Length: 444
Image 1 (cartoon, rainbow, N blue to C red):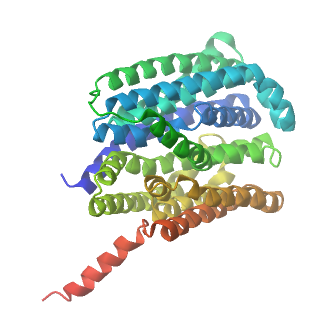
Image 2 (cartoon, helix red, strand yellow):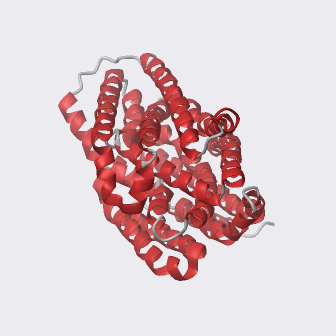
């Protein structure tokens, strides 16, 4: 099977599992909106956003580079270095979790009304954040070991099921609200995190130890050089809308936050299809670079870009057609999110068109080079929110997000081209196709 076909089939399976999980998640969130109101859903989304952002920082960025180093060490037969990396990552996760437990509540007093909302659910926030970051670590290692399905299963299938189960149990047994539901979800998610960790340890135990003599101190330096910038990059990409929700919590009502949050979750689901394409190709790309095979390296990235671009266009069309139907499940009041959702989904084409620039910068030992573009994107988001949200509401929030994504994606592409000299966007493949068509001439 050719690589593009393999990429499409594997990423399709991962994406379909995400679709199923998202359906369950949307059902749970729709139930919150229907039974407890839009404002309660808005509060729930703010709390989950806070837990996600805290979870990003607990492993100190090592969850963002686990795939990179696990794939590299596996390709080089250095199994012992994978274990050392894993021990360092999980140790940092545990230490940071304990610090959040000790000092997190007092720090929330600096965040005004948003901090008050998060503080009222603090135990659940910490538990969800710890479980989220643990499973991010697990997934990064499993993907690097060529187990992408095992890496994504907990987040794509089990987490949504637990959200819905938390709502059902709360309604049936406790007759409670958001607070009780979050507590139930946090307990279940923690149990799943432990089981997922056990699977990761088992997978690591199957990697040959290797016979090479690695310089541990040098490798630890490499880990930190990549981890610090990558955690910021990941926060600005994978958790972009969590940041946006926290920022918008002082500009929009909880009811409007619920609408924008649902649109953001639909966008995140759609973007996962693009992420899945690159997740499948990552080990191949890392191996090509480790073996200094530049032709294979660029070919693999080009193949992934083509699949991601077609997928993003298809998902944008699907959002335009079926988005209003999905939003209606949450109640008639959510239909005003149809246009903002379409605007948000335009960003899928932008992200896939510019290619995996962060990945290429890190592989070529320039992990910090991406930070200016990331900072520009976040500053653009904050500035355009302040400028557009007060007069235009939800549509202004969606346009602000699109502009911010365009700024950082274009900035990253330019930085990659100037520093590395490589155009990792989809445009070289398009130019090559056109050139091949011209050279072939008209058919006889």
